[in-house]
Length: 67
Image 1 (cartoon, rainbow, N blue to C red):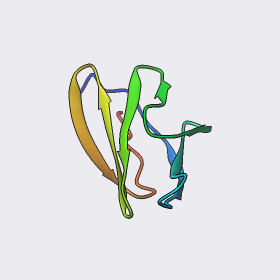
Image 2 (image 1 turned 30 degrees about the vertical axis):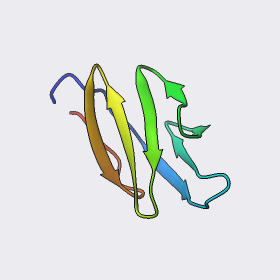
Image 3 (image 1 turned 45 degrees about the vertical axis):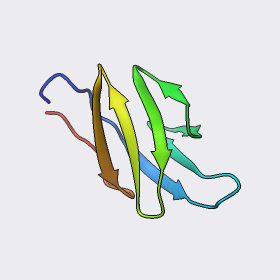
Image 4 (image 1 turned 90 degrees about the horizontal axis):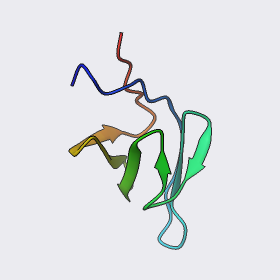
């Protein structure tokens, strides 16, 4: 976990037709990639991402900050 870089989660838009999130200032859709992160799935209340082979879930609008 200490190697996973900071991920700022600033927007969450869930719909059955076109769910998206804004991570580190970039709008991403399922399958989208950014700085080694991959958006696996966008759920009604969270997003599932992978980084370096590690899959994890972030609650909507909760950033991952690695100090």
